[in-house]
Length: 92
Image (cartoon, rainbow, N blue to C red; front, side, top):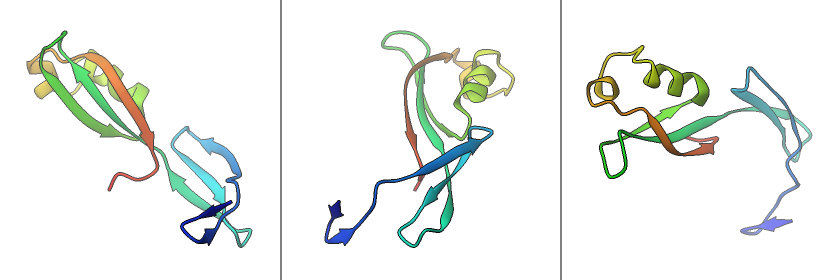
């Protein structure tokens, strides 16, 4: 496969540890670490207040929001419903 003039190979991955980090094999045959992040959107209700966040553990973070474990915006405005999320390896 070619991408923008650079030869690439299909990604081969190893299982992730704790669901947060993984390894990827580069062209030189070396295993490189990468991180897994989630960008997510919570809502209070339909057409209600929205909250956008980033985390490396979506299940834990949504649990914290729904149970008001961390006091702040989401607990103050009752923003607890997960409406969308996307997985990414880069948060920049």
